[in-house]
Image (tube, rainbow, N blue to C red; front, side, top):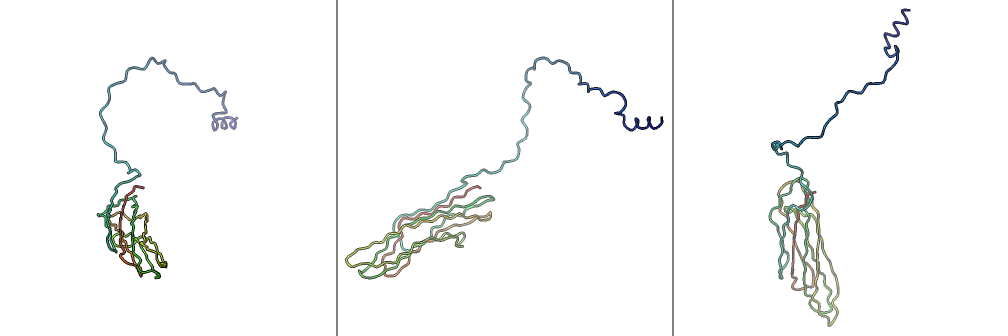
Length: 185
């Protein structure tokens, strides 16, 4: 008999029938009342993260002929965390090629630099022979794009334009432009 009572004491669920749970009693509710007055304005929360898109745009543009080399510089640009700088540059040249029957070489280039350190270069190289009785005024259009991902700081960007060659005359840099766009990423 002691064994029967001790097993029931260890497992109370084995004594008597199990009844279903009784839901709590709830009073019936009436219609919702009017909304109370608006409470006072809370404190301003912290500033959210900067969105994507263009943060600033800097450019330098010139027209008219000038001798080479030429450097187009932009004012100092501040770059923050999660920002890149898109550099775009273009220029046109004209070069005279003297006497007929002479071969000539001409090379035009642009170099993007950040604080005087070269980042990227783009150029065009031509070697040709001028036939008898042909007048040549050679024109070149050079352009380049570079995406720079510098650490946060202030930088001066510039673009160096050069024309070199042999057996050419009057190397001239004509229209030229240089743009730096700071972009949030």
